[in-house]
Amino acid sequence: LLKLISTNVMLPVKRAVLKTLVKFLHTCKYGNQRHDLTVQIVKGLSRGKKFDQRLMFVELCYLVLDKFSKKFFKEYCFTPALLLINDPTPIVRIKSSTLLPHLKSQLKMPSDRPLLQQLEASSRRSLMSERNKDVLAHIQRAVIELDQGDVKLDSEPDPDDRKREEEQNMFIVREERHDMKEEQVYQRSDHLTSTGNQTPGKALSAPFRIIAITTAYRPGEHEEDVPRSHVFILQTIIDHRLAISYHSSSLYARTATG
Image (cartoon, rainbow, N blue to C red; front, side, top):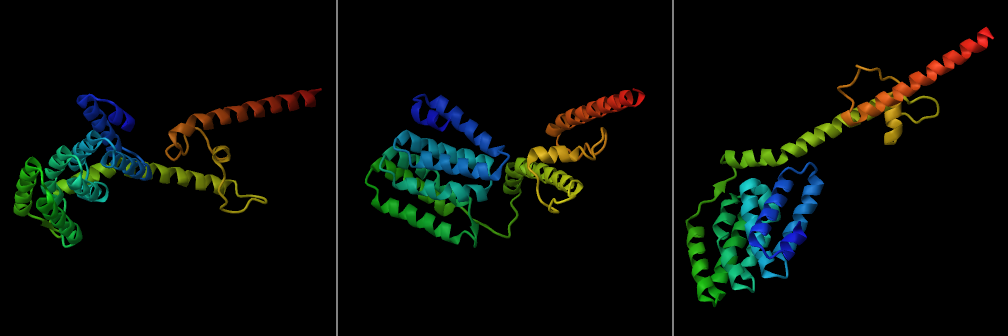
């Protein structure tokens, strides 16, 4: 999808792909995967060789502002967005200047004082060094809005930001709970099979864990602790065990009567 943004020339297609990427990041189940993908997307767009890639990064920032928490935006998008104010392409500098007031709205005092100082220094530096009249007009307008904007304190409640943070972590929390439940089942299986020369508490590989659970598994029991993806496998193994037991009993009976 990131390659499609870089190669496709149709702006509606690029925007649709960008929205898809942001939605995927928002519903991503794994924290490490979200981090790696976000870093890759931000780096690929904000440092793109083509100016339209850097323009798409500005649009990405607006999407992230709408969907993710302030903490997430500051971690991944704040510094790259601030660097675009010195982009060699005038249209990129114009677009990035519109982000300046939004960057300030993401800060809280006193914890974000270094970021606020960095924002003010960069905006005034670009205001003094800009030679393009059109770009300068946009930067001047942005600096006025920047001066008029307020910064919240760390102690001030922010229900909207809290809601966005809960929504962005909702799927990750669910996945972590599911993983914790699977680990509890695996630990139970290790306990059930810790006999003989087996080291107590030694973890088994996934296939042996599944088989180990069947030593004490009965249909209808412990099903709330067993992952759904394993229930069918467990039942299949149990059916084979019953079939082997039945054939062994029949063979013993024929031998005894013979």
